Amino acid sequence: MDKPYGALAEFYEYFIADCDYEKWSQYLLLEVKNRCSGGSCLDIACGSGYFTRALKRAGYDVTGVDVSPEMLEEAGEKTLKEGLRIDYVLQDIINLKSINKVNFVTCINDGFNYIPPEKLGKAFKNVAACLKKGGLFFFDISSAYKLENILGNNMFGEDGEEASYMWFNEFLCGKITMDLVVFKRENNGLYSKREETHVQYAHTQQFIEQKLKENGFKILKVCAHLGQPLKTDSERIEFIAIKE
Image 1 (cartoon, rainbow, N blue to C red):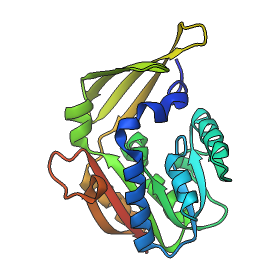
Image 2 (image 1 turned 90 degrees about the vertical axis):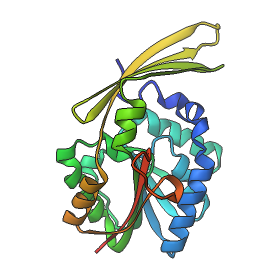
Image 3 (image 1 turned 135 degrees about the vertical axis):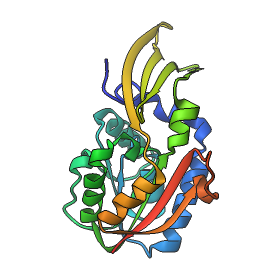
Image 4 (image 1 turned 90 degrees about the horizontal axis):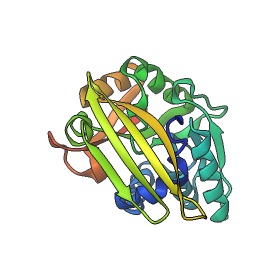
């Protein structure tokens, strides 16, 4: 059994093609441009570095941070292929540190869903410690509605040319356990099988806002995905906050 993203890392961007990361990254860059004059950035829970690379191409001095060595390896390879130079750091959000304070921090696509409720305040405190005064914090979560009603107690799968997966979910007591099986097509035409388990927590908007305020942030904007108005059945909640 692999750790989260141990098996998935190689095919992560292959499997999330339907998430329209291009449109998502352009929305993020517009928000950053409208609120930041430029400068340095930490992209935490950066995964394979899609948004990290987008920030770098837009001219920001960005460092990618993730807890998965396999995802950082993928990020490094994709960065080299694009001819970019980005530093990637192996680090857990719970123990996040930065030598130099940055102008803004991003955490895109569920990073904070992996943090247990009792550790969320510490994670936000660490983010605040990495930011300059007046620094901005852009992040999102999958909503409690999505985890319980869309993903919870359901099974998903995809059969691709390079790889396939099966994904079994159980929602219980405010968290979702996701058992993932990845099948990789090898050169001989046969498939190798790897398994991993993910656990995400269903944080409410009110709980997120409370922990932000307790740890030195003022909330500037809360919306659904790509700036849409929030509804009771919104699947993603996006936050922009400023360090006071």
